Amino acid sequence: MKNGEFPDGSKTLRLKIDMAAGNINMRDPVIYRIRRAHHHNTGDKWCIYPMYDYTHCISDAIEGITHSLCTLEFEAHRPLYDWVLDNIPAPHATRPRQYEFSRLELLYTITSKRKLNQLVVEKHVSGWDDPRMPTISGMRRRGYTPEGVRLFAKRAGISKSENIVDMSVLEGAIREELENSAPRLMAVLNPLKVTLTNFQAGKTQSRRAAFHPNHEEMGDREVPVSQTIYIEADDFAENPPKGFKRLIPGGEVRLRHGYVIKCGEVVKDEAGNVVELKCSIDHDTLGKIQKAAKLKA
Image (cartoon, rainbow, N blue to C red):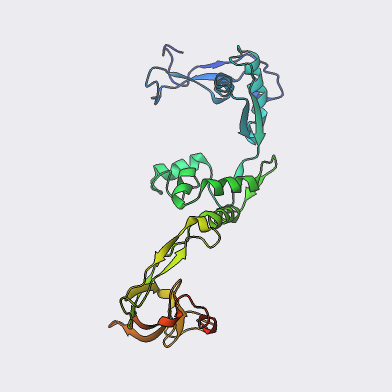
């Protein structure tokens, strides 16, 4: 077999244990098979390769592993794991032991490596680190933190019973960790131009804002104000629905960490789309809450 005298799949090497064993994994299991496949480390030097059940326990013993953690489908394989260890020289004083636990499944999420590999190979995703992939590298690109993932694992726990967890549990753990550790910043995704008609250089001031309301040690940053600013398009409604609490024609709102502004004019393009708002600043409202308390928007 080792010398390549036989074609692929024609011969196997088996352990002689007990063909009458109640556990099918102990019935003279195959430990080597012939497969001419290029290996990333040894190239084409070998044409025989060991089976997982055989190499698993030997690798653990060589590397000094004490606790070999496996999912429940390997529970029936543990007698073979122990048999091989009983019949080889012990490389270390500490003997490995296999422990099984239930596989953690996320509801409506593919976690099978075979199926995830198919997504990568068929280019349905950009790679293993695609933000849509439930991999560590994918989660990292999605903005998940190590602390948040550890919190999720702690909450999911270890069990031998079926362990299917809703994605909201993972997302909740990430949000909770980010809530306490992430600095606060602002961004406008769908911008609507706002021109401050009474902006006065030297009089209209910027204001400093904390990076986190509960963590002074994170410091602060300046929130600049200029004659042209941008707000989210969804934060303005020309014909507001009942209960709308944002900017409307003639209405007032307070800018985050800034002044109270009043919408005086709505500018539209030829198609009738709102492209600009012309608003005025109430210069007496920077850092003051008296007037803001009376605002509806």
